[in-house]
Image: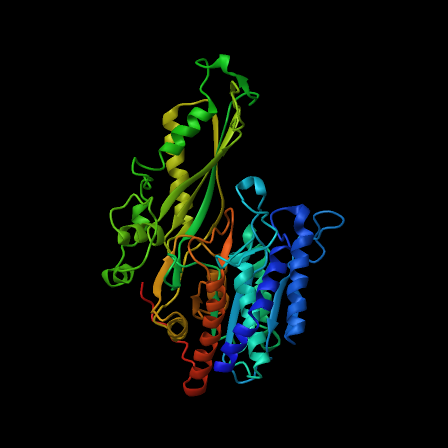
Length: 484
């Protein structure tokens, strides 16, 4: 293993250069004008697979669908494997994504977002996608390159599933995964023992962690439109009519109480209390949320990781430009979402949200028309942190960072976790973050510390060694002890 670690250090400049090239490909999936760049990023990864002699292929939801005459609608899901199934090695699936969030200098960036900048004095690499998720994806390839350079065989069969639409909801991924698993031994997903995902972050800036749970999400809109022609009106009509925005504000305010907690009747009955033995996992975890409304770190973590929460996202149709405009909007759309406990019945969530808003709407006795929609929902996810997959990851972190990792949950939602757990019949999934909480994923000046990149790759390598050693000495027990 020493020779592999030495090669990781020796090849570090090459890894930095690759990340720089990847960052400068603006693979923004939610911008149709940049869809070609998402394809270009896929081609970049395919060239890297070729350089490492890794078998790979493309799978499409619909290869014929196009945004326009030149831009295909759906980038490929890339599958790759270091050796074919049946090699006798434990099989580890690595999921990642190669698309990124939009970024413009006007959004507060101090540096051009798609121009890679390595501040060697501070040891920080800047650019959109550096930490989410191009750094971790290329980190895995860096590990493979180090093994090859050291002339040491990989201790596992490493399988990749890399998508280009994660930032817009992983469109079509579930059906592609199902098609692949249905191929049996001819498919890349056959024989997977465990899964590793590096698309999350440390909870602080100094201590590594492993993730075992995520909240779900349900996204809603409330449209309130004036009766009659539904057109905007001069504010001189104020006092004569009941304005759609007035009604929307009333509807919005009914969803939460003065503390900002969910106030929808019947919602708390859908939730499960946190068991004492599970609550103990929250003790001593580093958190740096200075804006928390809670008194203790444990309360803050439980509120953000386990309990459900409602967030308001915006109002479409209302005036939002600079200066003053005396207009009464004829139609407005309020947007909000619920982050929900893992295991909660999302159909029941939709039902009680709509029933509550209907009841409030009736009390308003308005002539305006309300329409409530759930635009989409994804369930939460929970893995078993007592599984040997977590033990392997924990030992890897201890070897590299010299500390035991925190076991954490996250307040967000990563749809792939639930998809893979379902499609792979409950195989254990571990979240191994590479970056830190202050990396600015989805924000301005996104970065990845070089220390995290270098040590993150070493964690990946030790993780594979730990699993390979288990495959040599033990049966790969797939039994998982659920702790919820």
